Length: 284
Image 1 (tube, one colour):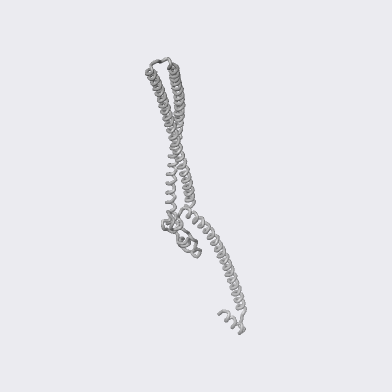
Image 2 (cartoon, helix red, strand yellow):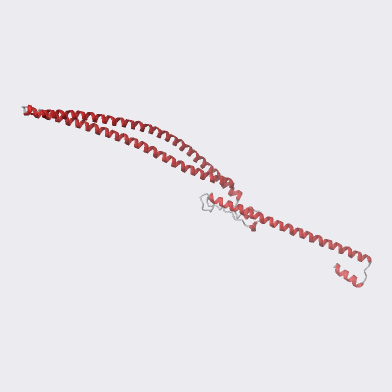
C-alpha cells in the first residue's frame, strides 16, 4: 500500500523534502528489520542444526546402552518373553527415534517401562541370586568341613590299616612258626615209624606190630589235619583282614572323590552365580 502511494506521489511529482527524508528513514528501518530477521533466522537455523546433531548423538549413545542392556538381559534369562525369568513379559528394548520428542519415555523405548517393570524385576533377580549365592557358599563350607572330616577319617583308617597290616605280619609269622613246629612233629613221628619198621623183624607178634603201625599213622594223620586246620584258619583270617582294609580304603576314597566332585560343582555354581550377580549390579 505504501509503495503504491509512493508511486502515485512520484508520478504526480508532488514530493517535498520532508517526503524524501521520511522515505529514506522508512527505507533504512525496513533494511534494518530485514537484516535483523535474517540474523535471527540464521541463529535459529544454527540452533536447530546443533539441537538435531545433539539429539542424534544422544540417540546413538542410547542405542549403545540399549544394546548392552539387551545382551545382559538375555544372559539373565529375561529375553525373550518365553525365557524363565521373563514370566511372559517383554524386556527387550527397541529405540523408536520417531518418538524422541514424546513425553512418555516408554514410547521411545519400544513400549518397555524401565522404572515400573525392568528395575523392580532386576532388583528381584538381584536378591534371588544373592540368596542362592549365599546358600551355595554355605554348602561349600559344609562340604569343606566334610572333606576335613573325611581326611581325618582317612588318616584314621590308614592308621588302622597299618595296625591290621602289622597284625597280618604277626599272623604270618605265627603261621610260619606253627607250620615249622608241625613239620618238626611230623618229621619226628615219621622217624619213629621208620624206626618201628626197622624193628619189625624183631617183633614176633604180628597183631602188636599192626597196632603200633596203626597208632603212629593215626597220630601222623591227626598232626597233618591239625596243621591244615591252623593253616586254613590263618589264611581265612588274613583274607578277612585284608578285605576289611581294602573296603575301608575304598570307602574313604569313594567318599573323598564324591566330596571333591561336589565341591567342584558348587564352586562352579557359586562362580556362575557371582558373575550373574555382577551383571545384575551393572544393570541396576
